[in-house]
Image: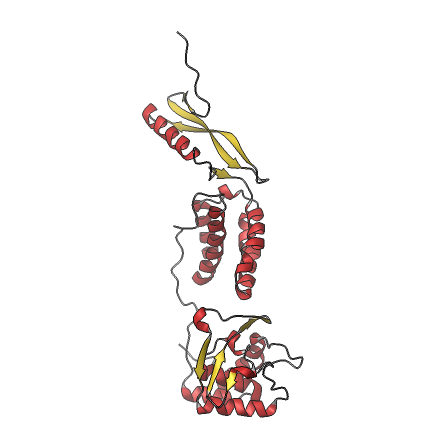
Length: 313
C-alpha cells in the first residue's frame, strides 16, 4: 500500500514522548519589511491527539488569511519611525511635542529593540506595573499608555498585528494627586492688584473669560470688538507655533464684561502696536509669550507673597 503524500501547508502532528507537538507554516513580516513563509513548531505537552489536532487546525485557519501575517518581526523602533513620519503630523503641535517626549523617555527605551510581535499584552502590563512602582501618577501612566496604544493601533491598520494588545491592560485608577483650589473673588482681586500691568491684564482676562492659555496668548487686536463687547477665539499657540483651537467648539465668541473691557483699554493705551494682526500680548520682538514664563516670574511670586500657595484644599 502506498501512503498518500501530505499536502504542502497542511501542517502535521508529531508524537513527542507522552505528548504531542504541532508544526505548520505561516506568513511573517521580516525585520526588513518583506513577507515570507516560515515553519513553526510548538510542543503542546501531555494533551490528547484530538486537542492537538484542533490546535493545529486553528493555526492553519488563521494562516489562510494572507492579508494579515501571523507575526511581524519588524522592530518597535522601526515602526515608531514610520509612525512619526506618516501619522504624527496629523496631530496638533502641542500633542506632537508631548508624544515625542513620551516616546523618547519611556516607550523606545522599553520596547525599541523588540520585534512588534513580542510587544505582548503581558509585556505591556509589566511596563505599566513598572511605571506605577516608580511613582508615576496614574494620569501620566494613562498618557504614556495612550501613546503606545496609538502606535499599536496603527500597527494593526498596517498589517503588523491582528489586534491592539494595549487594550485590556489594567491601569491605575485615575485620581487627583495634587489638591486643587479656586480663588475666591477677594483673592482674585488681591492677586491682580499685586501684579504689574501686563500680567494683570492677562490673568484678569483669563479669569473673566475662561480662555485657555494657548488661546489667551494667541489673541490679536482684531479679535477684540470693544463696540460689540466680545472677543473671538480663532487661534491657539504652543511653543510659538500657531494653529486652530484645541477642539471645533474652541472657535467661539466670548462676551466681555465691564471689568474685562477696562483691563483691555488700560493695556491698549500702554502698547505701541495695536494693528489688527499684532498680538495683543507679545515679547519685545513681537513674538508670542511663553505661558510658563508668566507663571514663574509673576503669578507664583505674587501668590507666595499673598500666602495663597500654602492654603489647603
